Amino acid sequence: MSWRNIFSYELKKLFSNPAVVFTVFGGIIIYSLLYPLPYDHQLPRELNVAVVDHDNSQQSRAFVRMLNATPQLNVSMNLSQEAEASKLIAGKEIEGVIVIPQHFYRDLLMGKSPVISVGGDASFFLVYGTIVEGAVSSGSTLGAQVKVAKAMMKDIPQPLAEKQYTPFSLNMVPVFNPTTGYGDYVVPGVFMLILQQTLLIASGMLQAGSTANSRRHLAARSLILFAIYSVMSMYYLGGSLSFNGVNRLAEPASLAMIMVPFLLATMGVGTLIGSAIKRPEIITLTVLLSSMPLLFSSGFVWPTSALPDWIYWLAQLSPSTPTIQSTIQLNQMGATLQSQQGFITQLWGLAFIYLALAFITQMRRKR
Image (cartoon, rainbow, N blue to C red; front, side, top):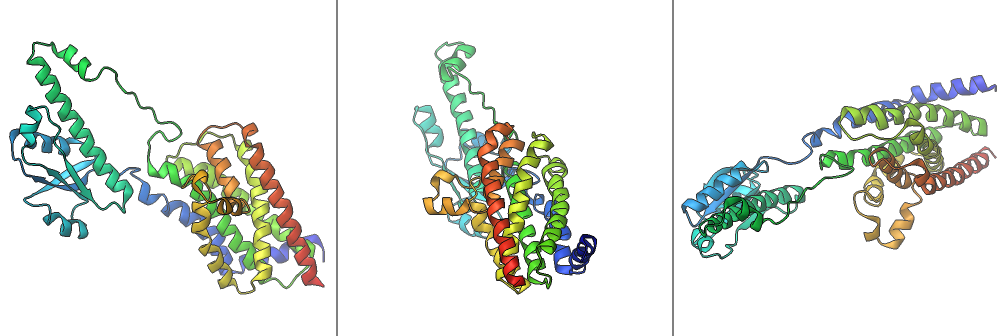
C-alpha cells in the first residue's frame, strides 16, 4: 500500500470515529470556552457576610460601615447572636460572619486591642481568605484612625502623627500574575493537561481499533495527529489565553521547541495505552482518572518541594509535567529558552523512549 493510500486510510478512520472526532475537536474547543468561565472575575468580591455587634456603639457602627466599604465584603444582615449564622452559612445565604465584641469602643479608647472574630466555611479557602482579608483591612484602617486621633489630641500635627503610626509605606507589586487572580494562575497549566489527555484518548482509541499493524500506518497516524494538535496547541497557547486575558510573553518559536517533543511523547504513550487496552471506553476512563493526580503532581498547583519523592519522580514520566512547568515559565513568567534546556532534554528523552516502545509494540502485533 502506498503512502498516499495509508494516509487516506488513517484519515478516514479518524473522521469516521465519532468518539475520536468529538474528543479531538469538540473536547478541546468546549474546554477552552467553559473551563476559564467560572474564573472570569479572577477573585471573589462582594461576599455576603453577617455582622454580630455586641457593642452597638458609635465606633462599632463605623467599623461595620468600613467592612461594607471594602471590595471584599458586603454586609447583608445584622444578627443578634453568633449561633444564628450557622444555618445561614450552611444554607449559602451568607459566606461568613464577623463578631464585634462587647466593650469594643471602650477598649479602643483605653489603648487595648479588641478581638474581632471571623467565621466562615474554611473548606472554600479562597472565599474564607477573602473574608479575613476584608476584616483585617478594615481593622487596620480603624486602628490607624484611632491612634492618629489620640496623637493629635496631644498637639501632634496630623502629618507627623500619620508618619509616627506608619514610619514606612508598603508598595506591593505582584509579578507573573498581575491581577493576582485564580484564572491567570490555573488556566495555563490546565490547558496543557487538557491537550495531553485528549491526545492520549484519541491516539489510544485509534490504536485499539486499528487492524493495520504496520509501522507505516503508525507513522501516518502520528503525523496526522501531530498536525492537528500543532494547530490546537497554537490556539491554546495563543488565541485562547489572549481571549481569556491571561498574560502571554513567549515567542511562538520558543513554545514550539517545547510542544514538538511533548506531542510526540504523548502520542507514544497513547499508542502504548491503545495496545494494552482494547476497549475504547476503558481507555477514556483510565486517562480521565489519571487527570487529577497528574494535575496536583505537576508542580504548579502544589509545590514540588512539598511532594513525596516517589510521587515527584513518578510524575516526571508524564510528558505534561515538564511541559506545564516550561510553558508557564516561558509564556507567563518571561523566561528565556536557554533556561528551559533541562525540560527540553527531558521531553525529547520521553519522546524517544515512548515512540520506540510504540513501534516495537506495533511490530509485535504484526507478527
